[in-house]
Structures are given as structure tokens and as C-alpha cells.
Length: 430
Ligand code: 4AD
Ligand code: MG
Image 1 (cartoon, helix red, strand yellow):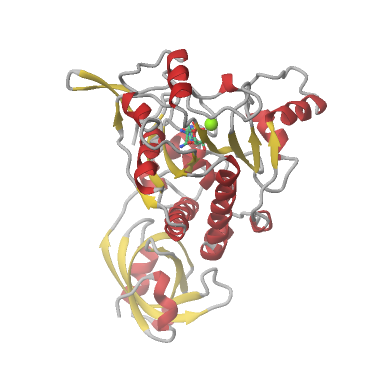
Image 2: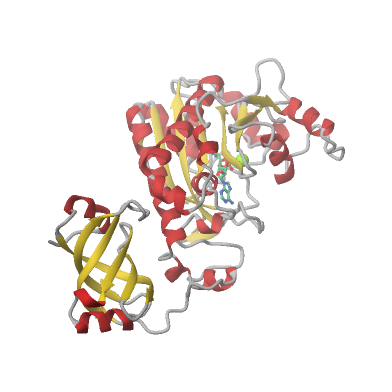
């Protein structure tokens, strides 16, 4: 019976054949232990000299790391095995013999591993991170589908710059100037006026000269946008969404979290509601904590965000930032116009901002005035202004950075391990 490692539990006591690669091996004169992987999981194959044909035992002793094979054996339940099963090998058919695989079980430097990212992805830790990423994507679709959102795909090639012009990747669109999307938000606002509640999931690009553990040049964002939703309801949806994603990973990726050594008690605590703190209060808090260089009007850096987050077990919303720190489209607060109805969601344990969101301006004149003040072309934004001309409604949305969320939930230090092929300041290979 041909099967996969994930499914061997259905065949206890039976003989199965699995297409697999040899991850690693240990052997003595009488027995060989093969660590096998097939993408669905990892399993140990045991080859006992006295129980197989001599050629099979010799073959297993000569197997090289990352050789591909069809392995046949009897499935045994084994409580000591991480997956709960082991394979008593009866036959091996080598498909391709790998020689000198560069990533050995010894320690390698980061640059070496990044140069070999196409191979590094096969390792157990990287496999676990990709499975968690996949579960976050799967549960994202589940959450939004269950809550009456429609998936909408904004364009990647755009003529406008929602998040400011300094970090744009410019390109030519025949004779016109175009930019790679930094955010699908403005298009999602148009879609929300057509569909009510929408979400997108796609790549976004920022030519940021930042070389930190939180910054990628190309990253994936989930951007919901909702008509008739104001500031508070926007935060409620965010906390429910983030909680449901974390709980799904806990429910469906137990093995992967274990492989990564993640402290799951910290994840279990991630249940809505999340705490909220205003920007004003956050500044006071930081000053009391001894950050005496920070004053009202300054943006927060990573150390500030971490100091605030450390105070809470759950992600924390920092709300009502100064207008001057934020993009042109945010709705001013009701009784003061020096702050806007926005919130950043800061993850615990030093993982930083995972969501940026806000209520959007729905008044035509105010939006037009802001575009002019930001010296943005009224022609380029004519379609966006139109949304305020025909049945304008209060609306809100947010963007969740997938890679920072994967880093936090997986407990991996750097976002470069959370995306299959990271694009970093000095890296476009592989
Ligand atoms: O806070 P940002 O810039 O918000 C927006 O783009 C809004 N237009 C979203 C919206 O309201 N629809 O980005 C949103 C999130 C951040 O909180 C962060 O998680 C992630 O995107 N992000 C990055 N992730 C990795 N590398 C980068 N360079 C990132 N820049 C932002
Ligand atoms: Mg932001």
C-alpha cells in the first residue's frame, strides 16, 4: 500500500511503501536507524540486519543524506516516537543517490544557510515553520469566510502610494510610471463599498533600508476592509481574528510547535479581548520607565514597543497616534484633531507591530484637503475620492503582516525564516 508519513496511523501492523528522503542516519553492525521525511512528516525507519535480506541492510548502511527512495516497511505504534509511529523496514528502493549534501547536522552560519535556502527548507525546523505559516493562512480564510467576508484581490502594479512615497519600488508600465503595491488598502476600500466586508491576501513590497529582524522587502499582508464599521468594532474584529488564528495553530500544529520548542502556555493565553492603551498614555508609561528621550509626537521604535508589550501577556493595541505620524486617509478623533482613530497591534515577547489599522476618512472635503496637504495628485486619487461622492459610509480596516505573525506564533527570532524565499536588503538569491 502506498501512503504518506502523515497517514501511517491508518496502517498499523500493515506493510506500506512511502516515497521519502533520508534526513539522517545512525547505524551499527546489527541495526540502522533511518530518519525519513516526505513533506507530510518525519518518521524513523528501523532496519534490523537479522530480519532483512543482506542487500537491504547493506543498502541502508550506505545510504547518503537526502537520497530519495521508496521505503517499504511495517507500521508500528510507538509512544516514544514524536509522531507516535515507527517503520520496521523490509525493503528500500533508491531513486537518486545524493552526494555531499551541503547542510549537515553540524552548526552552520546564517549566511551559509540563507545561500542554501532552497535546501535549508527541507530541515525539520524550517518545515515546522512553513506548516505553521500554512495553518495561519488556512485559518485566516476560515475566519473571514465564517464572518461573511469576501476575498478580493487588489492589483500588484499600481499608480499610487498609500503608505508614503519614500519606500516605493518604481517600475515602468509601458510609458507610465508604476509602483509595486505597498498595501492593497485603497482598492479594498472600493471593494468594501461593493461587497460590504472584504479581505485580501497578497504580496506587498517596501523598499525599506531597514536591516532588522522584523523587516522584509517583500512580505505578505492580510487586509480586511469593512463598510459601516467604526473604530471600536474594527478592534473587536482584529482581536477575534488573531485569537482564532492562534487557537487554530495550537489545535492543528502541536507537533510543529514542539519541534520548535515553543512555550505553548504563552499562546494559550491569547484570547480576546486584548488590552488597549492610547498613544498619550503609552508616552507617559515610557517616560516613567526611564525612556526620557521620548516626547509626545515621536514615533515608537522597537525598544519602545517591546517595553510596552512586556507589560501585557496578550497583544496590546496602541491607539490614537498623532495625525502627523500617520498616512493621509485616517479619520481624526471625534473631539481632537491632533490624533487619529487608528491602532497598531503589538505582539507579546518582543515581536513588534503585527497589525496597523484605522477608521478611514469618509468625508469628501476632508479627504480632498488631506490629499492636497500631502501633495498627492488629485488626478491619481480621483477614483479614491469618488468613493466619498457616491453613498459614502464610515468604514475601517487593517493590515496584518503574515511573516511577523508567523515569527511570533512559531517563536522564531527573525522574519527571514518565516517566508520560503526571503527578500532582504542585500539578498535576492536564491
Ligand atoms: O502598518 P502598515 O504599514 O499598514 C498598512 O499598510 C495599512 N495600509 C494596512 C491597512 O490598514 N489595510 O503595515 C501593516 C503590517 C504591519 O503591522 C506589519 O505587520 C507588516 O504589515 N509590515 C511588514 N512586515 C514585514 N516587513 C516589512 N517591511 C513590513 N512593513 C509592514
Ligand atoms: Mg504600521
